[in-house]
Length: 280
Image (cartoon, rainbow, N blue to C red; front, side, top):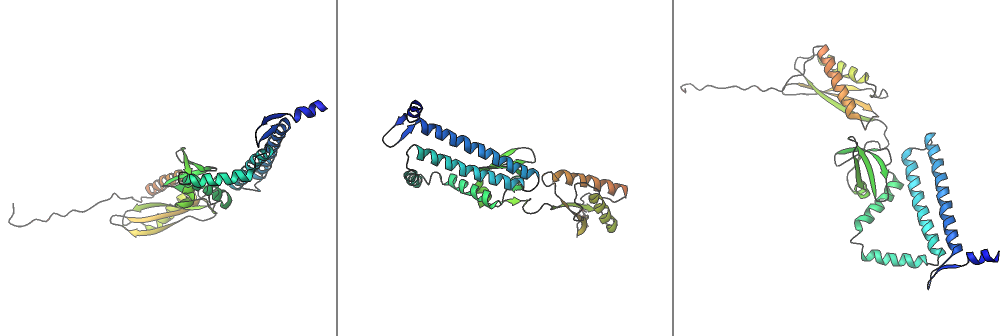
């Protein structure tokens, strides 16, 4: 027993203010393993709640990320305290260092603070459909400094968190499951406008991706130079792949117009040539 006690109290590293014994090393490893084990259990509990639809994916991810950061800070603080490092001194020294190099890393800190805003405030969450710099994508990761979206072309885009906080970003999913979309079409003058409206609304109602909660409708927009302009409005929750829905509706409208002799005109201009008498 004395041998075991002597082994555990044996010094592995002995500096002026830092001393690490075998027991310290064992304790640190136990704390890390227990923390990791508890985090895995917590993650499984959140996943089970997510599968039961008691918590959404974005909120679950935010809670996991915040918990992970807190545990990392706790473990690092515990390790430093265990080996005799004064953490208050480390914090003070770090603050002085950060002030010195603040100008060089201000963008990094801006991204980090923005990351906490995204995780706590959740204006952007996992699974949201966002539009950044005219590029539409689904959020697949909200990290400490950067977030990642996958575009409709299945391209991964890495975006600094500060961009979501400081710049204009459209969140198509924010608090709304359904989003309204448009399909514009022009028909020839002389067309039966009531028939046009009926055919366009039929095309939308027959599509499985168009929501039945809010009925689609067509409206007469304008008298154009060579056409009567109509606009079909519909709602869908398939925001990410809505381009396919829009394409399907254009195909369906074109087919119904052909079957019902509704003509989509070509753009045209009339040119008049005036002759002047006495000139050859």
